[in-house]
Structure formats: structure tokens, C-alpha cells
Amino acid sequence: MKAAYLLIALVLAGCEGSPEPAVEAAPVAAAVFPGGLVEAAWPVRMAVDAARAPYEGHPGWGQLFMRQHPEALASFLAEPQLKAGAARIHADHAALYRQAALLAAQATRHVYGGDRLPEDPAPVDYLLGEAMAVLGDCAGTSATLAKATGLSGDLSPRLTAWTTWAASPACPGDLGLVHAAPFPGLNAPSDAMGVAAPPPAPHYQFPLEAGGVNLEAIELSTLVALSDWHLDQARTLVGPEKVDQVELHLAPWRLPGEKAPTFASPPVRDDDWLFGSFVMSPEDALFLVDARATGVAAIEVWKEKSLYAAALAPAVEAGKLSPERVLDQAADLGASLKAAMVKSAGEERDFFRPFTEFAVQGLLRAGSIVADGSGEYRDAGILRINAFERANGPTIDPVFSISLAAWDAGNRSPLRAQEIIHSHLPRFPALSVARYPLDALHLRLGRTAGPAIPVQ
Image (cartoon, rainbow, N blue to C red; front, side, top):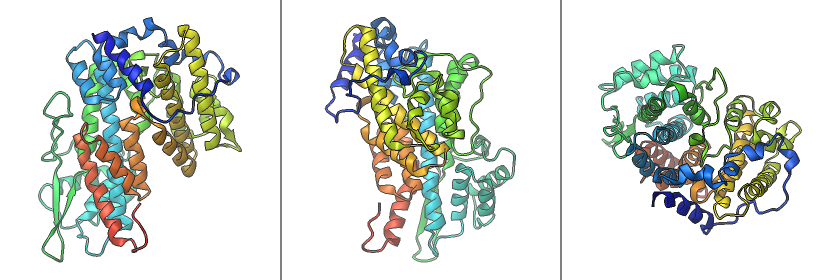
């Protein structure tokens, strides 16, 4: 029965009623992909029954494939020998809550920055200061916290911790030193999963000058602390010998200012971290680490080693990525993978479609990272939105969805972000911490927008 779980999930994912993906074209542009990169991709290797068998033998892998994170974690924890699966789910949670912290910080930056109202009490500078810290702005954090007055109780040691941190060498990369400071209410999750019972989020009330009411706010550090708790769980589960897999998995989702991971030697292929993922190989993941820092220049460095870099190379025009060409390349990549899977398996199978969609989605996401690294904000946004709108079934990734919500919040556009948060709250209740400042942004924009200007 267990062996049937994943196979059924794959078939259902492949047959799910959704728009046809942009991978139906038949031509295979093999010359674009040198050195057997297509054949080395995990969907092609796992088109063979024997290679896929270990992942069809446990429901946890099927639940992971379908992005049912709490259920998958429970399944993996029920069998302690499946440490890699549990570690990967914890790493996904670490990524998710880092992006949620980024979302909350972006919303707070607008609410108490550019959209600040005269009646906002002075203590909100504490909230704005910690938002700037999450965004990696050390100087802005120091200057803003210096204006935070009227703080008392739990907030006094927190203000001291943030102020000290912002002036230290730990800024901007190590927020862990801040949430480790005395912080009543910020405790480790009370259960092994860290999902059903997230740590309580401290709420603050700042008195407004008029009306005898309080402005309520929430502590952003809760999300960073929860992310780091899951990260520690993942590292502990895999041990020192495989901790590089955890760091590589989290790398695209690090907060601004966090250092990119470095490796004594390149991480080797570990299918426990590739199966059902949005990278085809460890080289793709390493390419994304480089692309986040150097943008389009990373393509030339990695195009002989990374399938994604090779696929993006023809989309470079005049020194930058063309979003339209990236969409074309995603279709070609999908067609190439599908043809290789048919050749590998000897016949076409229903699950080839969802397998292919991971690569199509992954390439669009890789393109957005390259564009971001090159400072092409608009082009990165085009690719990010395309990836989100084309996702269906197992490619609806909570981590990527929350990252898009953070991008929306940064653009002062809360509506889609609110919808995304609401859709993922049942499985990730701690996202309610990010919902608080996002809702505040929506209310603030509704108050300040003109009568003919809808809130986006």
C-alpha cells in the first residue's frame, strides 16, 4: 500500500485539471544542453522505476511531492531512519518563515515609513527599526531605533539588543544573535514538529494620543526565531557530514544581508534533496547561489555545468536576460526533458508531466534570481509572476508563494499577498505573524488612497 501512495499522487498531479503547461512543443534543442545535463536531471533519472522506487515506498515522500508539509513531517518523524526527509521539511519551514519575516518587514517599512501618519506614536520606531534590520539596513536600523522613545516592559531589552546588534560586526548577516537575547514569550515550539504549536508571538500595544485606543503590533523576530529553530532541526538531523545539503537548500531564501554559503568542496548529488525539487542537480543550486550575487555573469561561469545556466544562456540579450526568451527556453527545456524521460523509460508515463513542470517552474524562478542579481527588477518581477501563475498541483510551492507575497509587500501592494497568506495559513499557522503588518498596510493604504484610487 505504501508503494502505491506516491504513484497515485504522481498520476493525479499529472492528470489534474489545469491550464496546459508551456512544455508541449515537440522539438528538442539538444545542442543547447551540453555534457549530458538533461540526462543527469533528476526527472530523467527517476523516470526509471528502479530509481524512483525508494520514493514510492513511503507516504512521506508522496506528501512532500504534493507540498503537504505538516503531513510529510509527521510521516518522516514516525520512522526516525528517514532523517533526510524530515530534515528537508524542516529546511523548507526555515525558508518559508524567513520569507514571511521579509514580507512582514516590507509591510512594516511602508506602514511606519513612507505611509506613516502624524498620530502614530513614537514607539513605532522600534517596529520600523527591526524591519530595517530584517531588510539588512544596519545604518537605517541604528538611526531609526535611536528615535524610539516611550518603550517599557519587554521592549526595553529588545531595543537594547537590536541597537547593540546594528552597531556590531554581526549586522546585517546574523539575526540569530538578536532573537537569542532576553525575549519573554519567544520560546521553542512545544512539539517536535514546530508546526501545530508555533511559539506565541508577543503583541505590543502603543497608546495613541487621540481616542483612548491602542495601536497593536507584533514582534517580527518571532518569524526569524522560528526559521532558525527549524534550521537547527534540519542541521541536527543530517549531521555535519551532510549539512551542506541543508545550506544549499536554504540559500535562495536567505534574508538580505545574510552571507551566501561556502563549501569546502561542491556538494555531491543527494536525491533525497533533489526529488520533487525545483533544481535539477546540485550544480543548478550552486549556480543560483552565484546568480543571486553576480546576476547574468553567473550564466557564463556555469553554462557547461548547470542545466539551468545552459538553458538561460540563449536568453541573454545585450548583457541581460530577456523575459520573453526565458519563457521560450522554459518550453524548450520541458520538451527536452520529456523526450529524455520517454527515452529513459521506454514509454510515456502520466507522471512525466508534473516532473517536467518542476523544471519549467524552476527555470523561470532561476531567471528571476539572475535578473534580480543583475539589478533588473522589472524583468525579475515578470518571471516571478509567470512562475507563480503557471504553478499547479505539486508545483504550488508555499516557500515561493510567500516569497512572491514578500515581493508584493515591498511593492506596496497587499491584496495578492493577503490572498497568498490566507491560502497557506491552515498548514502554517505561524504565518499569522506576517499577516498582522500586511493587514495594517492594507488598512493604511485604504485610508490614504484617494476615492478613485483602488488599493492594489
